[in-house]
Length: 331
Ligand SMILES: Nc1ncnc2c1ncn2[C@@H]1O[C@H](COP(=O)(O)OP(=O)(O)OP(=O)(O)O)[C@@H](O)[C@H]1O
Ligand SMILES: [Mg+2]
Image 1 (tube, rainbow, N blue to C red):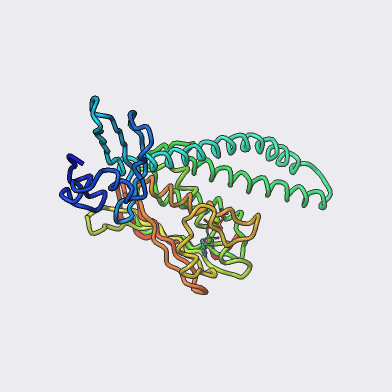
Image 2: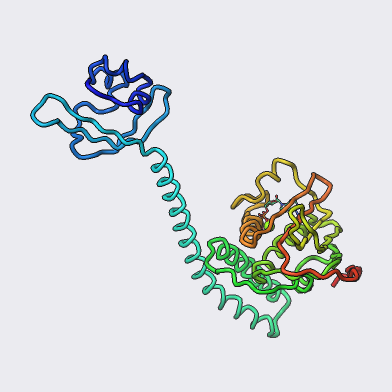
């Protein structure tokens, strides 16, 4: 060997001096022939090369005879980092494709659900025996649940871009609670406490989805026993001086273990039975809150209930005389 540099020596776990004392072929074979001896490298090729410490490098190698001599010049460019970034990009693109595909299917599915829900609602307005009405009710309920899942997938695949405007947090909470009062069983009591008036720059549809998911989970954690859901909102200034709207949804339900808690934001993670939970709710909540530059805190322990606190940057805040509504006369 006539010449080599430090980078090449390092790959072989050797020094330049040592390398110069070996014939190139020995140096190559001593690393399991990883720089293929017989291969045609007149065109640059990518090879994986395991260095002396066992780390894999992605190299672009070219080898050319020097003129009419017996010598050849081998050049190797280490592109390990570029290669890693390429793989990451590839993975991100694949995820995006899956998202687009799921979004497309969800969209078609939504179109199919429209006549099912439309006709079942029309039928419900007609006279019919109780038995038929009950069965029709099952159809409508299942279709409503299916529509909910479809909306979650659509949000998840980001098919709907967030359209932001000034949203009043207290008004949003009020709307969601009145809407949900009808669907949550009467043995679950709502207690809403609005301590400050905050405006946030947000997509109201997406924030509704966040609250609907948290309230549904709270009601499901309470189950068939009587229980309470407390929803509070107030203004908070963090250490960096950022004014935030805080929203807390606390339930007196079954709570969860640390193990469960460490997975709740994962897509498709559910502890509920088939047909009861899709495991998308909190993954969607997490995505939406991230989109809004906010964050989520969770406190829970088995038998002690669960508290979710959302913190979102406030556009403006106005302290109010506290308004406390307690739902002592459930619908
Ligand atoms: N308030 C809560 N109390 C106790 N456990 C909860 C609460 N909220 C979430 N969990 C746990 O986190 C899991 C994931 O919640 P997530 O909302 O993502 O999915 P899901 O409710 O199971 O299904 P989906 O919301 O898609 O119908 C739940 O299955 C449950 O184990
Ligand atoms: Mg849920």
